[in-house]
Image 1: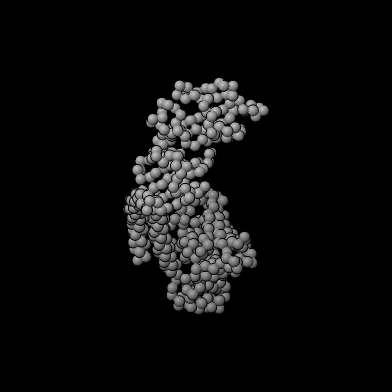
Image 2 (image 1 turned 135 degrees about the vertical axis):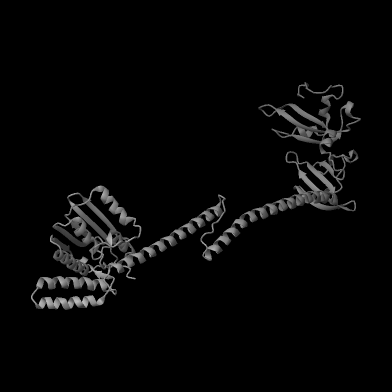
Length: 476
């Protein structure tokens, strides 16, 4: 409606003349409204003739229209029939009553039309805040719930018998409890299944471990899963395999050690009386002036002494080279072609402990196979360098072709643990030397052979030393 008398409506003016609004009691209050404020008019009798019978009450909200000078040039009024609000507040629960009340606790809308326009009888128990409380009303306990509307100060009030309200809560609780019970049942079934799936392979692994503890290394874990238990099962099988391999390696090592010791024993000249007889012969030969024969017998006696002495498996490098010198002297006395033994030793290497007769087989091979009944030269060199004892045996014999050299290297690197005696004093071979070195020293020495046709053969042995510079071998 404009102040100039014009108006715009969405209904026929025959039902209600909009100019009658200027006569309303609340119109004076509307004049004070400014900006976007609105005047909410409480419940009134319906002004529309057509709706008065079925819709006896109406609610209105009004706002002023002002120009830039804040002068009113019109009004906007929206009217809503109370029955539409009543339909919105309708509840399926017949025991619950929902009301729309204004600031003065006057009932604006409810299912009981006779109560509209009256004061709420329990208004003294209402508050300006949203709240829920239990009240005594009509000799019964009721649940009173208030929800204040922020835009106009009106409130929605719900009144329901306490038992009816709690029955809904109990129904919800029962449903929730049933749902939780079913969920827990399913959870415990799944938990039992998962626990069985986990504990069953663990029980199997426990049996396997107990069998291994009893010494049965043929058992294997049969868990094939890809989780942590499966990984542990595979690790356990690998550990058992490794233990079996280590046991087999120890057995082979002990077998090879016993065979090497047997070969050494077979190479020794055991009769002790022979040593005494030779000393007697040497004295008589020396008495008659045959110094060469006496020296030869003396060298043989030293070799025999070293051979039959079972109390000292480890001797110094100096003692070992002394025995080799006696051996070369005997060989030169017994054969036509002479062998010249050259020795180069530094002082630290002289006191290093090595197995007795470890170098004699190498010298013997050089004399018999390297020179092949001809004159020759053997260089024996020892030194300590960078924590290792290096022994070099170099001859200027006929040497070996690559094929023969490869066979010789394979024969001592991968021996078949067979030691055959030849026609030498010891004749236990390269394989036995290599085997004794590895059985004696825990730090794994190395032995290398280099040879070419016409340029001789070189054997290089390197033995790692321990902290004090002296090799501590296994003398058992």
